[in-house]
Length: 206
Image 1 (cartoon, rainbow, N blue to C red):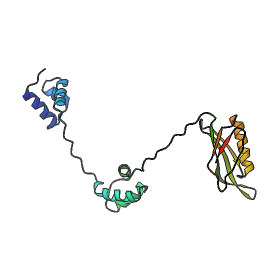
Image 2: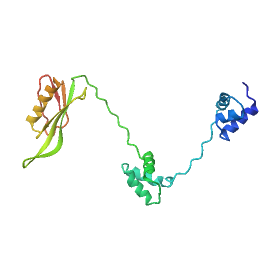
Image 3: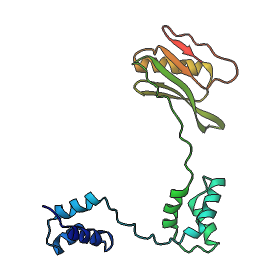
Image 4: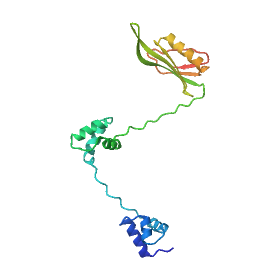
């Protein structure tokens, strides 16, 4: 269906200047909705954006950005109290949402995903869980932890010390629980001199 130039101009005026909807234009001019849509699309017109209403926080944005640049982890509640002392009257909930949009983002870090085969690798560490009182003695509560890198299966055994005999006993019990020995064991907690552990068929990396 051919559209007369006068009708085309009227459609575009109602859409762009008067901000009528496509359906309203089609109804009032007795046209099919697709016809009006095609005229608008062929003209490649865009409605001017509605003027943005000024926000109460606009006057405080320079102060907020400057403060967050110096203290990027400053709590929104603390920042809200600071701008209230400078005249801001908005509520804390909306302010918290606005601050999140202006808070500096930490630089993205690249991580190498660890991929291993079943039974290839396990990671070993000690965990410290504070202290417990036994009689009159205050003893550290330690936990021997071994994690299989492939399945993330965890073995954990609590101990009252981190001596070598407890360390070796943790290995033996973990191997029994897993039903085998990982080919490589990784340690990341060594303090002082390196340690060397020998298990049949196992490479220990310190």
